[in-house]
Amino acid sequence: MRLFLKQLRKRLRTFGQTIKQTTMKKLMIFVGALTLTGSLFAQKPASDDAKYSLEGLANLNTTDGMSFAAPSLRFRYFVNDNIAARVQFGFGGDGSSIVSTPSKESYTYANATGDKTGTVDIARSAFDVQLGAEYHLAGTDKMSPYFTGHIGFGKGSEEQTWTDVFYSNPADPTSALGYAEGFSVSAAGGYSTFSWGLGAGFDYYVADNLYLGLELNLTSTAVTNDDVVKNVTTPAGSSTITTLGNQKTYTNIGAAHGSVRIGWRF
Image (cartoon, rainbow, N blue to C red; front, side, top):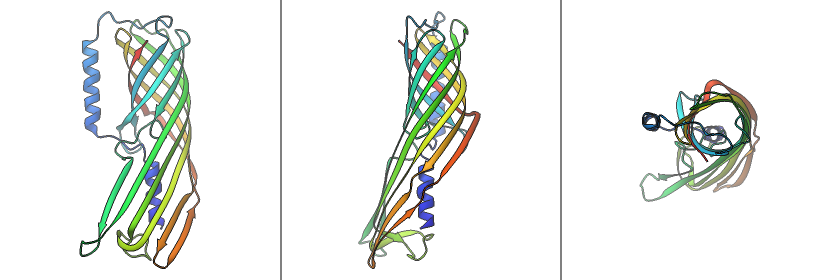
């Protein structure tokens, strides 16, 4: 039982697992190509000419090593040349996305003779929203440096359904899973997040209204795990087990939480 709950919570905490390094390389090649082919006459637009921007972000994550998590989407409204309001959407609870952790998984376990099977089905979902503001400095004709602050909210969940599957040794929750006729389990858990961040970044215009950017942040995130409810059915009867959730706060410092950005002003 403890192993199951530990694995479930681990999956919930790692919704923002990283994509493969090949994706990062492709992104950097694309960014480099845009920079090399950018117009020499590109200039950052005035807020009167382009009040809005829409951009994609590849988020840098150092929770389990220096790597990139999946993109988020950000929209900005420029109040004037110095001040912009922004909203960001992600599908990973902290601004990162579920990429290497799929939203659905299914596993099959066969009996000793192979003529009967049981299944484990897993379904996950997650999202987050950030609200923030930016203060842009004068910079240059092509570059617009800024300071930023934001708050964020996120939610994630996971459900597991075991059909004719249980621990190979029912008395030992650390034993491996295997086919077990007449055994079933349904379990559900989740988490919510609240975060804040302060950072700095820049927009660099490689063509008219088209920009590339980097952003680095100091962030703090409080994660509250929901109760994990597990319903177990065996040939001897049924039971419901509830494990209370908990809360933790973690902080990423400086470049530990950053993003590579590409966007369009309009």
